[in-house]
Each structure stands twice: as C-alpha cells, then as structure tokens.
Length: 113
Image (cartoon, rainbow, N blue to C red; front, side):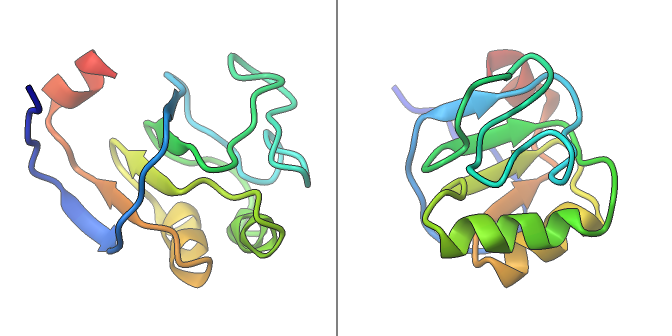
C-alpha cells in the first residue's frame, strides 16, 4: 500500500530510484566528489547517481549548486531530491540541473525514511 504525502514543489518533474537517506544536512560541494560519491559522513562511499536523495537541508558554499549541474551533465546526478526544508543552494542546483525537488513534507514522512 502506498501512502501519499503533501509537499511543496520547488522543481517539478517525474523521477524514480532507490532512496538514499541522510539524517544530516549535506554540503553538495564538500560531501560529494566529482563522481557523485560521498566522501564523508554516514553515506561515505555511496553514489548519488540515479537515487532519490533524501536529507533534511543543505549546508555550505553556493558553488554546491553547480556541483549538481556538473553531476547531471556526466549522468551521475540524483534522479530527485527530497528535503525537510530546502534552501537556496539546493533549490538553485536542482533547477539548473533539472532535478525534481520537493520539501515541506510532514514529519511522518521523515520518520519512515
């Protein structure tokens, strides 16, 4: 049985993929390398490619937006992003890389992921 959740759509689109979930904020510039692999933290060694990347919020440099674009051009980007609360760096990156992005889901969603 599927459960529906309401959310805010920041960048619309359709996507599918296995969820890759971080309980901690992610820095697109410092936490993920040029091959889309996490280099630090709880997801170290895991690839974001074709995953639905679920994390609370972004952190770090504005250059992180371009990290998503570079990954997209190389076929290594996540298929979608779900945030508890998205911020400008993540939103801009998703928009320019044409990656679906939603946020503002209920707390129940994050308890299940």
